[in-house]
Image (cartoon, rainbow, N blue to C red; front, side):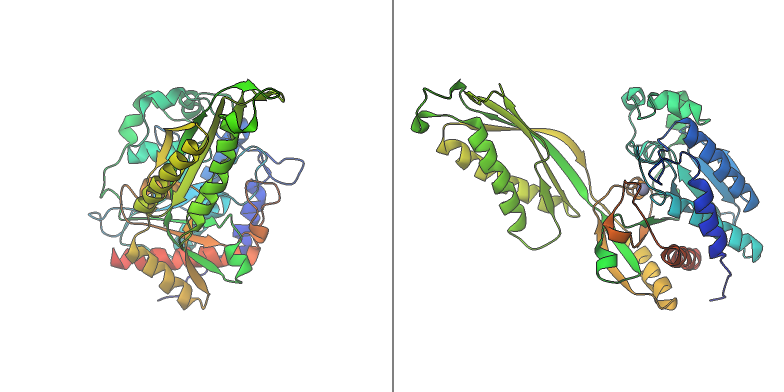
Length: 409
Ligand SMILES: [Zn+2]
């Protein structure tokens, strides 16, 4: 394959320049979606897109698309990009690396006078961190009632979409159908420490894990902590404590990369001298395989029943949230593998434990993701950091993968 120059210095300089929008005192950014810094950063990004010879538009959901026609007008677009909004007190690399690499690749192709067969669309999604609002509008997973949710900026989703130049009343029209894209490929920082720990260059993402969350209510009998003998208690807290330990044991009992967490626990009435009559806690399970999540949950359900029976308490599970797993496409994975191999980079296949816009795009067509190392595995923090050389490697793999996809899909 023909060598195409990619200006890594310019890419890293642009990442630094974008970090000025919403810079916080700790060295990261607070560029929450729909805020003033988000909008100003998006204006900067759109300027970069125009310099890269892309036709820029903002869709009804506030997503930015930069498009360039291919040589074959009948082909669907190759879509690539990421997001530039951050969590409050976030870092300079989450989303930014993938967004600015995508623009730099489009610019490199233009400067090298390379025309792809497919149209290319560089995308910068709106409000990824708040819950994939922009990408879910495209995939049709966004519901109208969610437009009233309040984002970190203080605006509702509808207000925020409008603030970025979108038209929330027409957000349904931005929806695309399965098959409307040739492929979606996203470069992102790993946000975990696996690649750095194993001294590897590139993560080839197997998919984005599914997430299920439940609210768990343990009911016992509230009574006096001084007068109720130990053998006559129906202590909801004791059952909850055993539950927390049991979840950890069940999740670890089989091989794999599944994770399970009890992240919140509240005891009622919550007084030092009262045996808790009720405890409300959460259960969260994540894995790439939905049937494994179900199997783990079934196991936990059975064990919870036994824990409850042992001291006269009951467990009730109420589903809070479900995100289905989004596997990446095997052909796109192979393309990313090949692109990395040609650059003599080391790789490993891995799941993404964090959510990404790519999981919404998996609804529309073949999806792939490329990870680069996060130093110390730190993310969603001003301390988030990825090396300039790793960013360059990731961008080169993304460019190689795109050009391969252009000939194959
Ligand atoms: Zn991100």
